[in-house]
Length: 619
Ligand SMILES: Nc1ncnc2c1ncn2[C@@H]1O[C@H](COP(=O)(O)OP(=O)(O)O)[C@@H](O)[C@H]1O
Ligand SMILES: [Mg+2]
Image 1 (tube, rainbow, N blue to C red):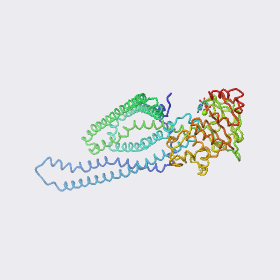
Image 2 (image 1 turned 30 degrees about the vertical axis):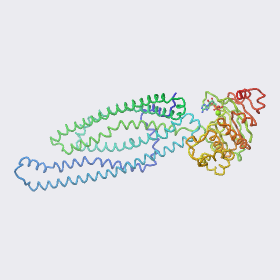
Image 3 (image 1 turned 90 degrees about the vertical axis):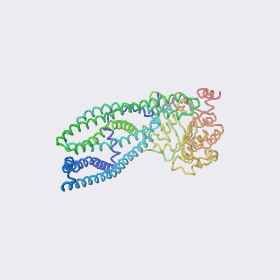
């Protein structure tokens, strides 16, 4: 099954537009209600300004350019071209008045254009400001929610999906906000405004031109359905492509090692082509839809010219009104023409919103206690009492595990790969809760500890060490305020890290490459020790911490271990006999249960599971 990075869920797209989701988005917008009111006011203003020019044109035509006096002059000129070069006085006066009138109207028009520019700028700015701020808030909230999720949540949600939520999905929302929600109000202003003007100019002509509306309605519905399908398909293909690339890029070493470049190229070329085909399909639909809409518009204009021309000739309607009418119809069609596209954007935004809220609503299954308990002084006594655990209900990992580790004691857990050793660690760190049974630290159930407090007493060194981008120092302190430079120095000495840090050109300020690529596995491992020790934890857990290092590093680490495990409760999971032998006690995990325990010598003479494990190890 391909890993779903969350792009694939586009399948959900196409659900009817959801008022419930909009209601949930509302609180994010309400914080900006004043700015929104300002934005809407500006929109209204800009709309009114947009509506003015055709009307001015009408006035110019009817009142001045085609005024009765001008008509008179025209008719006289054509009657007696060669005769009277002088016009009668009243006519030349009228001509002057008309010229002035046209000039004034032109000036007003220029003024309107400037105002439209100014208010349009303000409108745009304000609306974008709102959109960007809402995105800022939602992104922050979402990031916070995701980081507070339990590890189990991360088991089920691959990184790619989480990143998509915080970036793409929120961007979709922004797109929706910008191009649909806000223009929605604007479109309504325009449509209502034009409707009112058209009906006052000539209600008969208005009704005639509306004959095409039902046709447009049906076509839009039809096309938006087609477009939605194509759109969904395109997104799915793009998702597939993204997933493919994400996987290949992170596995580049393996690809090159096994000379898979050729075949990967072929596979990519196939996916790439699929997404091209899907893209073309969408383009095809819009290439058809737009001209059809233009056709409807032209048809409406034809109707207006036919019927309106008739009315002008019969002098029921002025020529200016007819010209204005045609301009308004063009304005009227624009929002209608865009409706299918906006509908798509809205659909995709609603799908994104739904997914965002799904994450927001996801409640942590590792709850924080209401009244956290903690002993005055932490000693480090660890107890497992009949612990049962399963990651999923069908496959129990631990069954009835009970053991106790005394303060300062060092206990090793051994067992075959996959038996559940790391699981024991996960439970102690409270990344998961037991299905049954209890775990106690200093007699207090882990569920009663505050998670932060609990984890601050446990130092964990794992086989995989995660190094963040940033300086070496930051990687040790990890931004913890309580870790000052003295603590770090002490931790460095204790963990034997000074040798390799001295070798770094910039020492403690050395920038770590992404993922710690500039450090060797052994160096990363030592760094992880330093990091764990910077807490000065009461309990130290080493989970196969020395499995992947060279003998020299191993020696350094062993030395550090003997030093740092004194006065600390230590739980060690190890392959190497040298580490296990140091333990006061060894627990042998087998098929989810602790089957043997004792010292190395005791268990070897017992000749059971431990003996068999070691026989394999030695040969
Ligand atoms: N996050 C997880 N989700 C589901 N199953 C898991 C998860 N982590 C480990 N397992 C399974 O639980 C069992 C014990 O794993 P683990 O404790 O890591 O073994 P090990 O003893 O090698 O450390 C294995 O069968 C493993 O496949
Ligand atoms: Mg393990």
